[in-house]
Image (tube, rainbow over all chains, first blue to last red; front, side, top):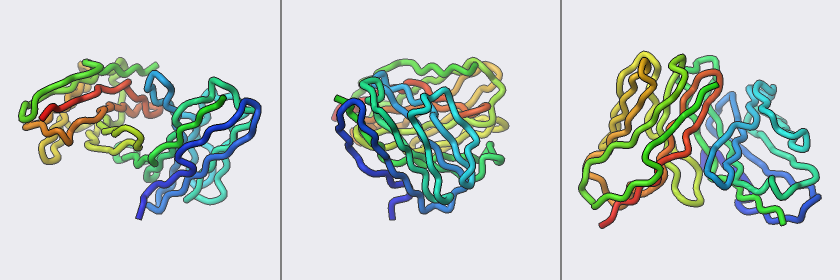
Length: 116
Length: 109
């Protein structure tokens, strides 16, 4: 009965490879997010999708491409991985962001990406 | 640009103590403020959400306050337990959600 689930939990890969991280939520939320937590533990938003449409795209290299096949899924594809991409990536979801005062985020357990 | 600061970065207390975690933010034009808990190797769990019109929220032994005009929030934990050991993050929602770096709390038995 996991609310926000992301796979894999750990991902170890070589520089230059292409990899994907999958995320699914069963909460019926309209909005999903990808966050990156770097080695200094700073958590920063990367993307936000509302009902399959991109609404936030921070200054993220275009090697990162989110894909939302439906509002319950938001996958993250990363091309040509670099050493600096090593981090923990968190997926999250929330109700309709228009009601920002009630916006409560639910996070997945994270994917630890290590680029060698 | 919104910036969120949490002090202290780490805190170690004996079991049973009451404690306060601090969060400050630079732009008072916010929709809400959330406190999260992060356990090692796990995701974040939302503890409390305070809307901009509210002054505080309570859940069990946790009480969060918000002083929007001064850009401050506190998370009060009563009668701390070893199970409270985790990193506590404050996040402020203005144009987007901006997180602090967190306070790592250790409650010693």
